[in-house]
Image 1 (cartoon, rainbow, N blue to C red):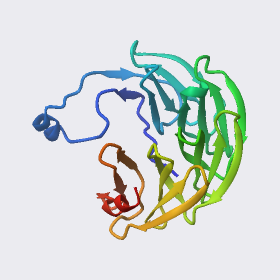
Image 2: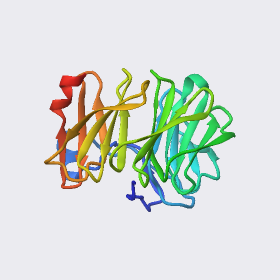
Image 3: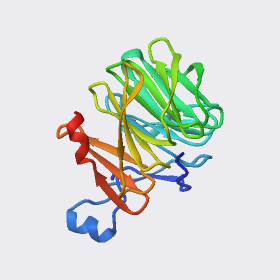
Length: 241
């Protein structure tokens, strides 16, 4: 359950991580531009549609849609209470929001941004991801410690599967696997997106409360952010790829 809302009313569109000013100078990275977004609501996850040049910004009760080419807001998806994130399925022209306070997913049209339907999930859907291999969207339901699979083409929930812990972040590997961090168990699980089943469970003894998750697709490596101010490279996962 991501609680690290950003209260600022500005969006810094230059870096994907926060680093010190000294590190910026040493590395050559520098601030390009600060864009004032404004509006109401705290911030959570942002999702970039690189093909359409759109940035989806979760703002507590609605999602702002920002054109990164024109540097301006172009619309919003309303009525998404407690929204945490957005997943995109461009081949079906659909987007999906995880509405933590409503225990639902809002499905919207990527071109018009119009709401198409709502789907029930487990309790407090937070992380959300689309897996193109199975054609399914997956929500991580923090309070019910499970995952809900949604058929992206039909817009219907298929199954909710227990994960054995409170899920925080997920990433699809492009080969039919979903990796999920369990915040309260210090674990990483592997989930089969077609069989809808947990297939592996990995202990992370040196990683307290694993939260963010990223993947180097080319080198098949996972990077896990930990609340004890460290990052873990999951070398052991290599054996199951």
